[in-house]
Image 1 (cartoon, rainbow, N blue to C red):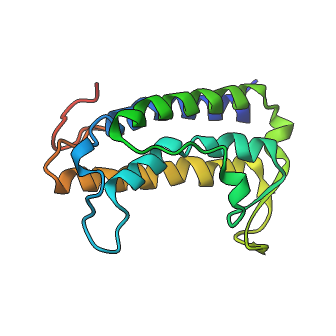
Image 2 (cartoon, helix red, strand yellow; image 1 turned 180 degrees about the vertical axis):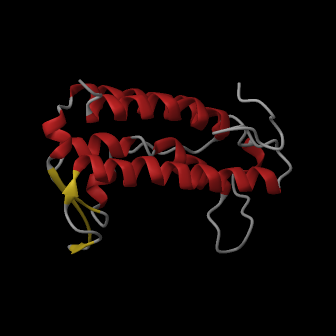
Length: 172
C-alpha cells in the first residue's frame, strides 16, 4: 500500500518548516522597510507573508471556497510586525497546518475547492490537494526564494535550502 495524499502532504510540510525557519531567522530587524526596488514588497511584509502562509492550509481544508477580496476571511492570519516574531509565528502556524492535515482524510483532500477574487474565478475548481500544492507549497517556495534574493542583495548569507548555497556549502 502506497503513501496517502495526506501522508505525502504532511511529509512535505515537515520538510519545508526547517527550510523556512532558516530563511526567516536571517531577516534583519533593522531592514524591515527595505525593498530592492520601489515596486518591490518591503522585506518585512515579504517575510511576514512567508511566515503566515501556513494559515492557508487550514483555510483550504475547512472551507469549500475562498474569495481573495473577502477581508473578513483573512482575520485568522496573524499580523507580524517585527523580525523577532517571524519564526515563532511561522512555527505556530506550521503546527496548526500539520494538525489540520492530520485530521483530514484523503476524501477531504480530493474534494473540490475554488478560489475567486471579487466573485470572479481565479482558476477553475480543483481538488483541495491541488490548491494546497499551488497556494501553499509553490507559493511558499516562490516567496521564500524571493526573500533569499533580498538577503543576497543585503549581503546577508543565504541559507542552504534544497542543496548548498554560495554561503552554506552543506545543508544543516
